[in-house]
Length: 216
Ligand SMILES: *Cc1c(COP(=O)(O)O)cnc(C)c1O
Image (cartoon, rainbow, N blue to C red; front, side):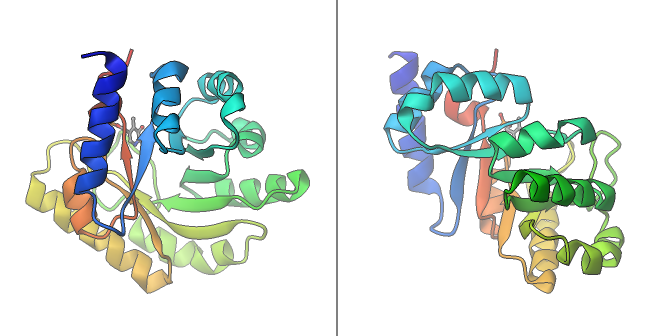
């Protein structure tokens, strides 16, 4: 079996298992442009990248495929906001009010209206950023007013070490928070926990290694 046919089989298999409300974001960081091309030709048009330079090279290499749907999922550094906005239509990792304000200001300068998912952190996890529940509720009136951002949802990651039931509970809390705020998109679930996230209502599962195989 070639690498390409393996990825194609995994794509079909995953798509068959996802519930209707859950879309697949193919996380292509650490994967080749050729592997992405194989999936794009099978109809997988949404890709998640976390490093700007790597993503830029692949966007150039795949330009002949026509417009693809690029999502930025990595830690968003303040000094990278402008080039990220120039290359990605959706940002999953806006994790503070100052970063959201900066993103809005630069988006207005660039004449773009990015879709934004706010990253939340509902459990202690020193390795990750994100709004706490209280922090998000407090900042919400200001966040909502940030034109031209289109804030459509929340993104979260489960800390390592949780079992499946605890993960599903966490994803359920994130879904309830999004509902309370009137947000429809939920970016939750990766290779190891997408099924719990999908059950909890995820609308975007971000899957890398279970789709492409291990990263280089
Ligand atoms: C790398 C990454 C993923 C995908 O991870 P896999 O375990 O390979 O599916 C999902 N979300 C974020 C934010 C990532 O950085």
